[in-house]
Image 1 (cartoon, rainbow, N blue to C red):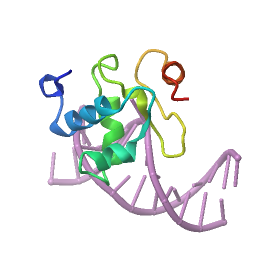
Image 2: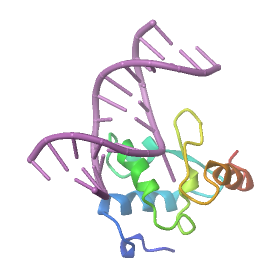
Image 3: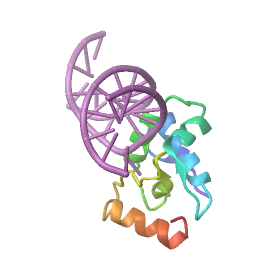
Amino acid sequence: MINTHQMDGTDFQKSVWEQLLAIPRGKTRTYKQIAEAIGHPSSYRAVANACRANPTPITIPCHRAVRSDGSLGGYSGEGGVATKARLLSEEGAL
DNA sequence: CACATGACCTAAC
DNA sequence: TGTTAGGCCATGT
Protein backbone atom coordinates (compact mmCIF):
# COMPACT_ATOMS: atom_id res chain seq x y z
CA MET A 1 0.00 0.00 0.00
CA ILE A 2 1.21 3.48 -0.75
CA ASN A 3 0.67 6.64 1.29
CA THR A 4 -0.03 9.43 -1.15
CA HIS A 5 -0.28 11.82 1.77
CA GLN A 6 3.43 11.73 2.35
CA MET A 7 4.20 12.76 -1.22
CA ASP A 8 4.66 16.32 -2.40
CA GLY A 9 1.63 18.06 -3.86
CA THR A 10 -1.67 19.64 -3.01
CA ASP A 11 -4.54 17.79 -1.34
CA PHE A 12 -6.34 17.83 -4.64
CA GLN A 13 -3.48 16.06 -6.40
CA LYS A 14 -3.13 13.58 -3.57
CA SER A 15 -6.81 12.72 -3.94
CA VAL A 16 -6.35 12.20 -7.66
CA TRP A 17 -3.32 9.95 -7.14
CA GLU A 18 -5.27 8.01 -4.55
CA GLN A 19 -7.98 7.32 -7.10
CA LEU A 20 -5.36 6.29 -9.65
CA LEU A 21 -4.02 3.76 -7.15
CA ALA A 22 -7.59 2.56 -6.64
CA ILE A 23 -7.87 1.59 -10.29
CA PRO A 24 -7.54 -2.21 -10.59
CA ARG A 25 -4.89 -3.65 -12.89
CA GLY A 26 -6.07 -4.18 -16.46
CA LYS A 27 -8.70 -1.48 -16.10
CA THR A 28 -8.87 2.13 -17.24
CA ARG A 29 -10.76 5.17 -15.96
CA THR A 30 -11.50 8.46 -17.68
CA TYR A 31 -10.26 11.71 -16.21
CA LYS A 32 -13.82 12.78 -15.66
CA GLN A 33 -14.65 9.59 -13.77
CA ILE A 34 -11.70 10.23 -11.48
CA ALA A 35 -12.88 13.81 -10.97
CA GLU A 36 -16.28 12.53 -9.91
CA ALA A 37 -14.68 9.92 -7.66
CA ILE A 38 -12.83 12.57 -5.64
CA GLY A 39 -15.92 14.71 -5.32
CA HIS A 40 -15.03 17.28 -7.98
CA PRO A 41 -17.10 16.28 -11.02
CA SER A 42 -16.27 19.47 -12.89
CA SER A 43 -12.55 19.51 -12.15
CA TYR A 44 -11.61 17.00 -14.81
CA ARG A 45 -9.17 19.59 -16.17
CA ALA A 46 -7.31 19.83 -12.89
CA VAL A 47 -7.36 16.03 -12.68
CA ALA A 48 -5.40 15.80 -15.90
CA ASN A 49 -3.00 18.38 -14.52
CA ALA A 50 -2.58 16.39 -11.32
CA CYS A 51 -1.67 13.33 -13.37
CA ARG A 52 0.82 15.38 -15.34
CA ALA A 53 2.23 16.76 -12.10
CA ASN A 54 2.65 13.20 -10.84
CA PRO A 55 6.20 12.98 -9.39
CA THR A 56 6.41 9.19 -9.60
CA PRO A 57 4.74 7.61 -12.65
CA ILE A 58 6.27 4.35 -11.47
CA THR A 59 4.59 4.28 -8.08
CA ILE A 60 1.37 5.70 -9.43
CA PRO A 61 -0.44 3.96 -12.32
CA CYS A 62 -1.15 7.23 -14.09
CA HIS A 63 -1.13 5.32 -17.38
CA ARG A 64 -4.58 3.96 -16.51
CA ALA A 65 -6.08 7.41 -17.03
CA VAL A 66 -7.56 7.80 -20.51
CA ARG A 67 -9.88 10.17 -22.31
CA SER A 68 -13.63 9.74 -22.58
CA ASP A 69 -13.24 9.18 -26.31
CA GLY A 70 -11.12 6.13 -25.59
CA SER A 71 -7.95 7.88 -26.74
CA LEU A 72 -4.88 7.40 -24.59
CA GLY A 73 -4.46 11.11 -24.05
CA GLY A 74 -0.87 11.70 -22.92
CA TYR A 75 1.90 10.51 -20.65
CA SER A 76 4.68 12.38 -18.84
CA GLY A 77 6.66 9.23 -18.23
CA GLU A 78 9.45 7.85 -20.35
CA GLY A 79 8.45 7.07 -23.92
CA GLY A 80 5.34 9.23 -23.71
CA VAL A 81 2.07 7.80 -25.00
CA ALA A 82 3.98 4.94 -26.60
CA THR A 83 4.94 3.57 -23.19
CA LYS A 84 1.43 4.22 -21.92
CA ALA A 85 -0.04 2.18 -24.75
CA ARG A 86 2.43 -0.62 -24.11
CA LEU A 87 1.69 -0.72 -20.39
CA LEU A 88 -2.04 -0.94 -21.02
CA SER A 89 -1.46 -3.62 -23.60
CA GLU A 90 0.65 -5.59 -21.12
CA GLU A 91 -2.08 -5.32 -18.51
CA GLY A 92 -4.71 -6.41 -20.98
CA ALA A 93 -6.62 -3.14 -20.88
CA LEU A 94 -6.22 -2.58 -24.58
C1' DC B 1 -4.21 39.49 -7.63
C1' DA B 2 -4.22 38.71 -12.96
C1' DC B 3 -2.61 36.01 -16.79
C1' DA B 4 -1.10 31.82 -18.98
C1' DT B 5 -0.83 26.66 -19.15
C1' DG B 6 -2.56 21.80 -19.91
C1' DA B 7 -2.21 14.13 -20.13
C1' DC B 8 -9.90 17.43 -20.85
C1' DC B 9 -15.15 17.38 -22.21
C1' DT B 10 -19.17 18.44 -25.00
C1' DA B 11 -21.53 20.28 -28.70
C1' DA B 12 -21.74 21.89 -33.36
C1' DC B 13 -20.25 21.90 -38.37
C1' DT C 1 -15.20 10.77 -38.99
C1' DG C 2 -12.24 14.90 -38.32
C1' DT C 3 -12.00 19.65 -37.07
C1' DT C 4 -13.46 24.04 -34.50
C1' DA C 5 -15.03 26.60 -30.75
C1' DG C 6 -16.38 27.43 -25.93
C1' DG C 7 -16.27 26.09 -21.18
C1' DC C 8 -13.93 24.33 -17.05
C1' DC C 9 -10.65 23.98 -13.00
C1' DA C 10 -6.22 23.66 -10.23
C1' DT C 11 -1.30 25.32 -10.72
C1' DG C 12 2.52 28.08 -11.82
C1' DT C 13 4.58 32.55 -13.07
